[in-house]
Figure 1 (spheres, one colour):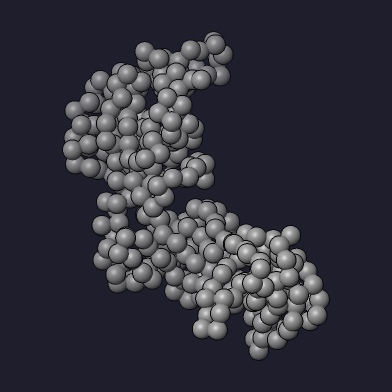
Figure 2 (figure 1 turned 45 degrees about the vertical axis):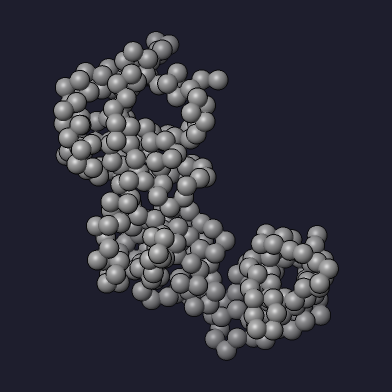
Amino acid sequence: MKSVAETEIRSGERNWIGSKEHAPEKEFVMNQVMNLEKDTKAIEQLIGQGTVLWGQVTRVGNDHDRGMAYMLVALRGDELPHRYTCIVYRDEADAEFKSGHLLYLVGHRVPVTVIGIDKEHQRLIGSRKRAQEKNKVDMLQDLASGKEMEGTILNFVSYGAYVEVNGVVGLLKNTDYSIDFSEIRESHNAGDVLTVKCKEVTNEGKIFWVLPEKTHRAKPIDWNIEPDTALLGTVQNICSFANGVGIFVRIAPGLDALCTIPQNVEVEVGTRVSVHITSIEPAAEAYMPPRVKGRIMRVV
């Protein structure tokens, strides 16, 4: 298997096939070799100062020799005399997520601090994690004051979305986004910009965002469900209540049923189950979903 080193620059140039379409990239690689020699002192100064630079993620892959993922970031700014490729390995890629893929970052602008020079392959070595940590420190006053800030949606999870503000990633839960239990992914896509403010910073440094004014659906949920019917659903959440455990099962887009569960049945989030609907109570507000209760019959 080829390592990153084998697929990147060899002695300052690639193993070019001679295709004219690669000429601009080859010229960039050769220029980067010469510029790196001239800019070494300036780059070492950036390393010593921990300066945060910004660049676009152009590629994500796996270094088989190191046994970890990496991303390539195209860096160019006032602090850098020339354009450079910077490699960021997985262990320096994210202050929030210590593991997992990096594919969702392709095309995104990310903050990076330069932590080394890879002279063998004529590129910089960077850390997005350290840049995020530095930016978070600089943002502490804004986070504590509840200042409204613009953030970009990076990716979605079942309970909300991860939103990046100035390179710092925090979680926006669906419950902190809407008043009608609607999900962020119903109205937005990755890359969309939202106005958020900090709800909480945990002792571990995790950030939770909230919308300054929570939203709700423009149109009511279209549901056609009657009591005493059975249907399939997916377990979304498991909660403990004073009188026992409640299982929230997604039975239609945007609609969950609060269910009880037999003692001999075990479920977890994501489990597909059959549900017997026992009652439906329409909400007072048209945009709110009805209150649906049911009983899990079995795992399917």
